[in-house]
Image 1 (tube, rainbow, N blue to C red):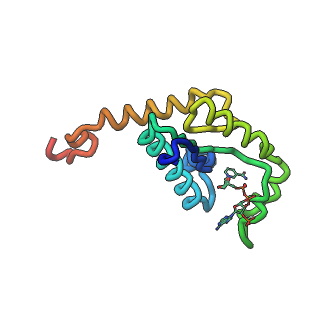
Image 2 (cartoon, rainbow, N blue to C red):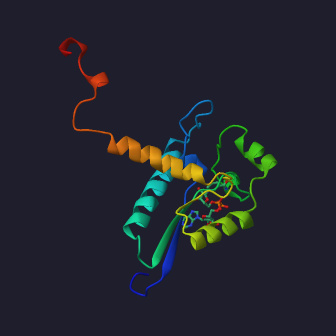
Length: 150
Ligand SMILES: NC(=O)c1ccc[n+]([C@@H]2O[C@H](COP(=O)([O-])OP(=O)(O)OC[C@H]3O[C@@H](n4cnc5c(N)ncnc54)[C@H](OP(=O)(O)O)[C@@H]3O)[C@@H](O)[C@H]2O)c1
């Protein structure tokens, strides 16, 4: 893509990349799925940053529940009741997910969450991450220090 001077990569993650471990509903039996989707988000954001200014765009698409066959093909023993509930809910039509992805490619949005009304929420996550990384020092934080040595 770089050699030919154009291209786009869309990696499909999930909203389950975010907050999957948090109460009140930590994901059941989804550690590998959530972890993998988290990897896809981080990998894609880093790759997009590496390619900043290049003629190849990178997007990580993070759908929520989507009306595909996904939840019917989870194997012989899905999470109890999950398949039925998912297909009662229906999820977002595939066409809408694709529309969001293509629009985000046009606007240059790297993290595309089709059902997220407040698009700036993604920027706030990035700002919080930057704050965490940039305020971390090479000195052991007080809460980790041995109380007897303080
Ligand atoms: N559906 C949702 O609610 C939802 C929500 C968030 C994220 N996602 C993500 O969206 C992506 C697509 O899922 P989907 O909902 O469209 O599921 P799907 O309807 O089950 O489709 C999965 C697709 O992946 C292909 N596939 C599976 N294993 C493969 C392999 N080893 N090599 C190559 N192709 C393979 C299947 O091809 P065959 O049909 O030929 O097997 C099928 O076309 C996944 O990454 C999923 O995690 C889905």
